[in-house]
Length: 434
Image (cartoon, rainbow, N blue to C red):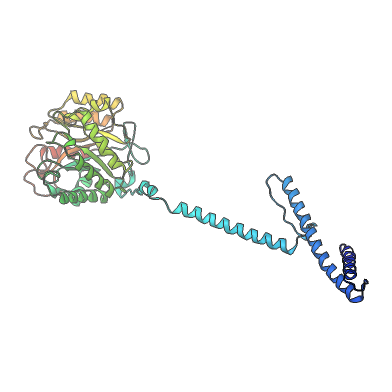
């Protein structure tokens, strides 16, 4: 090696000087010479290795400075750069550590993505199911301006029957009855009217579990039949929906949580505010109830009643709610309500108010008295002009003009025409000709 000769001379001189200082023979014998050469060879090898490593470091630094990305070329004996065993081992260890760190980082990233925090879990909406039939085909509904449209953005019109109070006439909430309405009457929607106040009302001593069971029975039957269904909090004698606001919030929290994955549910949060109840009072109620539903079902259609038994839709038009997919209820009874109210409907819809006629009858506003089918036809001229959705009051055999089943008929499904009341025959014929 090129360093051996120099090292041998230095070591030999050192040895001679040391022996002389100790009073020995100041000459190198054969044995000492061999030892010095062996040491010199070992030291020379170490020096050469150190020089090679220094040269490699300089080469890498030069390459890094000439490569803006900092990428280092692979060093090997084939490209003229010497790589020692010790530096190769260090590079291998560094590469292994880098690989392990990269795998750990990737695992941490994957874990962070697949293990959501509690807050993100709470905000994840339920996966929607469309069900079968008509409701399955059209799916989740939403508003496009004043128009109710389906999941494809196509206009849709819901129409069908409203039950009477569930506590009054529970037997009409059944699969076969709803199937008759779908197949023989040609309807696609049913409204489940649950009273908070009257006659075993939900908030006045009625059997809440039984009433909720009736709602579930109705929803399940409608869903299996591919129909849309309205869950109606049927405010009436209490006048102001705020009277049972907390109970309403609890009820709609449970219902919207239970049916968060359904696309065929609409929520009607107050049927007919009346008496001295103002729109501002109804609005404040809605502003508390709607977020309860939205927490479970962010985009379901919600129907809000308006003052004076759902006639004052112009008040809602002047001060609408600040929520998406909200419609405003208008109710009419053709024997009482005529041009004043249908002109109000026409004006409000033209000026951007989404309206759902969630209750109407052909008789007067008492639910009894003579039917006025000419006035009813005038109403439907306006309804069809705007493709509005509507539900007729009521599916029962009560002895009053608005019930569509004859009082003498005890059947809860499969009604023939002669088992219907005068109103029942008229509205069935209207449905069947749509």
